[in-house]
Length: 317
Image 1 (cartoon, rainbow, N blue to C red):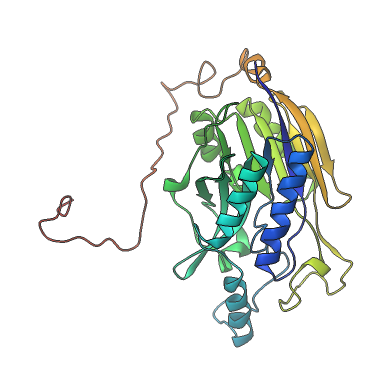
Image 2: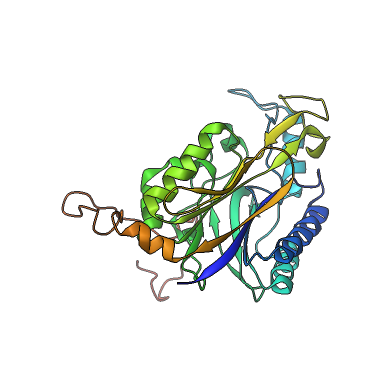
């Protein structure tokens, strides 16, 4: 049996300012630690920004100069991984001696990815997960991840991993995470609907794991002023209302959901609850039927270009 305190951070970026948002994240990590947290989860796209309400002025069959310029500004707000911003976040995790999971917009080449980064209590960047399937219009600005970033991080309380927002509606991805034995299942999200509560509780029950869910509390005033927004131009308008929460392996909500503003929610978690839950259900163990159903996961990188030299090891592969 081991107990630890987990935190979910419900906040918003500094509009249009990546460096200031990284500094804000570092301050929030320190605050979570002051509240006793040993693991902290931030929302989807906290660094770089979730473009809620943006359309980049696009329509089928054409793009516009205005939309291209908006995308160029959005790309400038993304970060490289690793890079200076991950150094700052790693130092904050080290100063707090915490595991930190945080959503970022990652630039790699000419493509942006919605990514979750994992930092250890020693400040090391332990891994990342790129969102496999951007949802709907997210595909206007984000690329697709592949199986090579289905990373799981070992912690003293069991494996930790992140599945981002509507990836959680991909049953086989959830099954892959259960197959990795995930104990701390993080869901950084932009979904603030009432139905997300049911989704998170279902995952906790299905996976017999703790679920940490973090969503931004985002107003129009926290959205970049130089980006068109289809939802509202009223600075007081709420674009994302939060709903962050912490749930135990039997689907019981221990903290949240909170819809009132920026907040850090915490709960003490007891790992023995996982074993208690697995007594009557293990989705990849005694409650599975591998003689009938089986999942194969391709975790190989899938780059668009592979360079090889004649005679080099593996060149003929």
